[in-house]
Each structure stands twice: as structure tokens, then as C-alpha cells.
Image 1 (cartoon, rainbow, N blue to C red):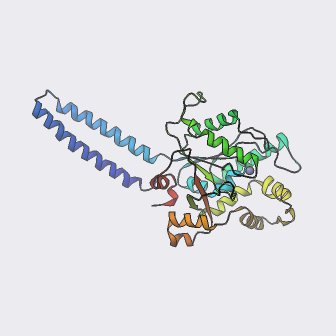
Image 2 (image 1 turned 180 degrees about the horizontal axis):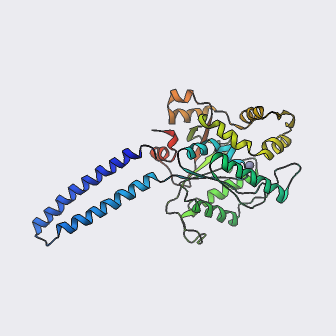
Image 3 (image 1 turned 45 degrees about the vertical axis):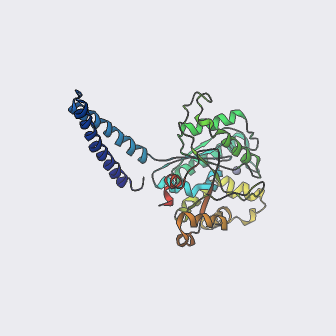
Length: 331
Ligand SMILES: [Zn+2]
């Protein structure tokens, strides 16, 4: 999307070059072989061909990116990449959050269908605040298994969104729902392009780039920060998204973590609490990635970031691909 005008000028120059070059070649063929070619008709065809070619190139370059982030619960994507989502949306791209379970077990005194409804309402509020689309799949919380049924649900979601980038957890995690979400998304990579699998939903013609959310688990292997996004400018937006999950950040998680008494009553202080408790600090590994993508000087000024690791089962992006798929990184 950035510098689209300059790119369009480039394409125009290439098209003019092709027109001039090939007109000369056809004239030469005509002269040499004395063919009965109608140059005027050929000119018209070449003009139409180049016009369509230029348009398709411009369209391919300028269409918004389609990003899908898949978490196990109706707050996972928000925690892991709410800031990156806000940046994509601000640049005109399309982001979908998917929760693979309906969150119906995530509370100390509520549960079942009523809790699921409450949590779906919270995701709708997040969708409004962040400008994303938010889908909650109707699978029970705390009981997720990496079955074929769930894999097909994920394949359909990725296809329907025509995803360029898919982001999900790694399969190293303390929570079984997170682990199995990681597994089913890995299982969906490649399969999203196989027409005989889930044939009711058209396959993707290109395997998207699959990425993992950042985590702190070390075994069997630690998270590798291949990409890091500066979210300092949208940190307030990220907090807006987290704040919508009242049932989680102000009730359930403090209860299960035994820190209920730390939750401030005051709204402004609640945001400070979310910032200190729920926003991951920039660690040395992520700092290194920030230096790579933004340069040393800029990286020094970055207070908040979200990092991602490249999954080997999707398309493997080059550095140029990553800058195209994450336009907030700049050139
Ligand atoms: Zn979760």
C-alpha cells in the first residue's frame, strides 16, 4: 500500500518499454518474412494485453493484506498481537481474530452457555475497538483436542479469509488448548491448498506465511524472534482491546492467579495494571529483532513490541516478503 503511486509509475514505464520493444520486433518479423500481418490489429491487441497486465499488477500490489490470527480463547489474539492488528488496520489491511474455543470454562463462578455468550459479547466489543473481525468457534473451552473436525474448521477459516499471513501459538505451552491450537494450525498449513480436503470451501492457490506468537517456553526449544513489530504508537489501542475482556482480566485471571486484591477499582489505574501485567516487556531476543528491522537507533526508542517466529510449514518469506507483509516495518 505504501508508495503505491511510485510503484504504478514503475509498472507504466515497464509497459511502455514492452510496447516499444515488441512493436519493433513485430515490424521486423513482418519485414523479414513478408507476412500478411495487420499491424494495426496487432497494436490494438498489444494495447489491450498491456492494459490488462498493468491493471492486474497494480491490483495485486494494492489489495489489502489479509491477516488471520488464531488463538485458543477469546482473548489470546488480543494479548499476543493486539498492537500489530491495530497497526495493520490503521494501514487499511484486514485482520481477523479467531478463537478456537468459546471460552465457556474461563471463570470461577460462571460457566457454560451463559459465560460463552458473555465472552462472545466481549469479542464483539474488541472488534469495534480495534477494527478487526472476531470469530468464536463453538468448541468447549478446556477440552480442545487436535481432531480432524477442528483441523477442517481451521482450514475453512483460513481459506474464507484468503489469508496472506496466519499467526497462531506454538505447540509448546502450559495450556492444552493453546498447544492443540498450535497443532491444528500447523496441520492446516499446506492442506489449505489441497482441493480434495474440505472441498466445500475453495482452496488457496498459495500457501500463506504461517507465524507463531511470542511465548516464554524454553523446552524443547525457545521461541525465536524472526520478526518484531514496534507497537509503541498503538499501545493505547492494545489496552482498549484488553480492557473489553472484563470477565478475564478483572475477574477470572486474578482469581486463578491469586492476585484479586491487586486489581484497582479506578479505571485509569486499571489501564496501568493491564500495561504492567499483560503487556510483554521487550526482552534481549526481541530487542535484537527490533534492531534488525528498524535499525539500532530506532530500536533504542521502542518501548513496546510484539514478536513472531516463522513456521517452516507455510511459505517461507524472504526479507523483502516480510517487509511487504508487515508494511509497518518500513523499508
Ligand atoms: Zn488462552
